Image (cartoon, rainbow over all chains, first blue to last red):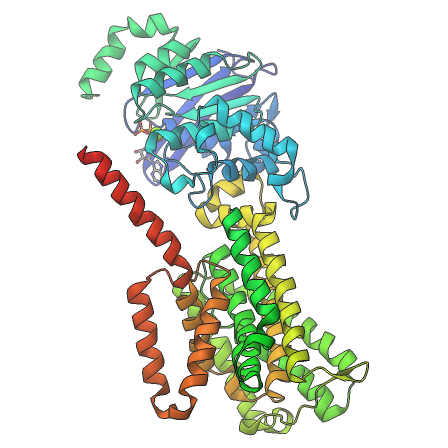
Length: 256
Length: 322
Ligand SMILES: Nc1ncnc2c1ncn2[C@@H]1O[C@H](COP(=O)(O)OP(=O)(O)OP(=O)(O)O)[C@@H](O)[C@H]1O
Ligand SMILES: [Mg+2]
């Protein structure tokens, strides 16, 4: 691992830290996501995975360190600026617009694709063939097309997770970050999710947080294991699967 | 969706022929029809805020009142022509929305309610105290109606149709805004402000725009109110009127724009019928309010949704037992 940022990487973290009062939620993390790479972060509860996501997306400021996206230092940039560079993310607890339908949720996202406003604010997206086609495509990818006009407040938990992924994908991201997309979804939905992630365009770099080992290891090229805010270990899916240290860590924490 | 269009079409048609089908038009066109349109418009500005920003305002009469007083003071006291005073009144009412929205939107829920209530009370006491300008508690009276091409616009049917056209235009604009990117973004902000921010929306700017739009609607209500009474008094901006409006909005269904007119019609008819027994008015209005909310907690417009939910629940239950 080099100490200077790698210009060719989609995402590059150097000595990134974040404190919450006395808690060191993320401590001195450095890694790169290469262009087109699928990197998965696993780790015990409270390891700092979601906090790391919030730092990368810009939702929280850094306490220390440096983050670059596609070679550009974004450590001090607003979330919308980072979105504009092609970063899209989902949230561990759904942050959808419950009062809107699935399609309307996508319209809100698509209106600002990559942080740039596309059409007049006063235009009606439902009458824009391009936006309708894009939202339809996104819903089809996660198998929610038949629910396009249902309000999200009436969705099952699994469906909201799927829609989260569709929202992120609709933005046509170059760097996609998913926070536990498989949490609490049914086995059949899980199978579809794995299929979807595997079929992702090779141009998209993927950073995935996943508790579910089956999903994590099926999708990843490379796995990082976090523990107590630090990087515990990293390796290929096979190395992680066979690592006794990782097994001990998970057993020691009575992980589900 | 189509059923909704049919219902709106039928209601518009009814409103168009209303002066010719109603019994005793001399009384009901003004006290039922025009009154519903006027109250409905101010209530619409409240419902629009509630629907889009999730905020209940008791200050909409402030904007109406500012506009009414501006026009009355300029024209009746200083002889300025309506051609200038009416547009100026609307501009001032709307600009007041920019300044007040900028402050008020930093507050939430009950604090917003209190702040807007304070506005109403402020204007009320100001109009009482500034007697030399506002005419004190008797207000400014005998506001002569403006003439367009020699036509008295406050003639019974003319005024009704004028109000109807204004209301149709503004209501259509509200519906149009509702389904625009702007409307969807506002609903998005209400449900999840953090996410719209990270998508790149400027939440506070959009919310302010919605607030100013509502202030503009209330200001138009102020023009209509001025010529409806041909007077403006502190009571027309007072607390009692604001509470009336709150009742109108809640009875009609606070999360439905069309509910404003339904609520306004109920109140207008109720006021007309009970006006001979005014000492029971407040108690009777309270009883009506409670009764309607017992039957329809989401307001009259919410009854459809309520029935649909109940039916779905029954279907789900019977599917479960089979
Ligand atoms: N906004 C916050 N304020 C204070 N402490 C926080 C905040 N967000 C996270 N933390 C703390 O930081 C630590 C890491 O939390 P984080 O949510 O990043 O863990 P995680 O790895 O995503 O866990 P999980 O697997 O449960 O989702 C925890 O101790 C948590 O309590
Ligand atoms: Mg987490």
